[in-house]
Image 1 (cartoon, one colour):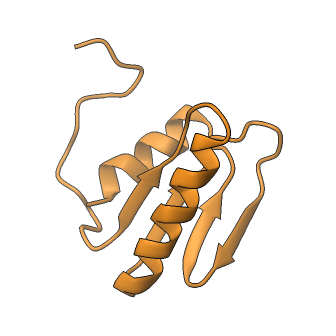
Image 2: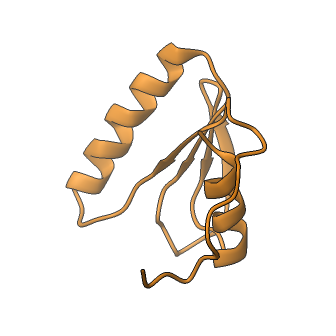
Image 3: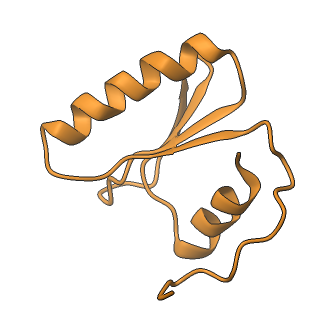
Length: 83
């Protein structure tokens, strides 16, 4: 398998739900909105990495943390620690 990440380990926080959003507009935005709608209903710790490289901002909307972009090492940590 070719990957920029190390082999997976056992999750540390298996209650965290991670959504990775990417792709061409406007489908990327539509998918993000649908995912956000579903995650807010779950009432569980959730993060959406939005795939927007223009700014590395973080905000919380309806209990879901929205992150525009992460460096590979930080993204890998989230992926390993999420359910």
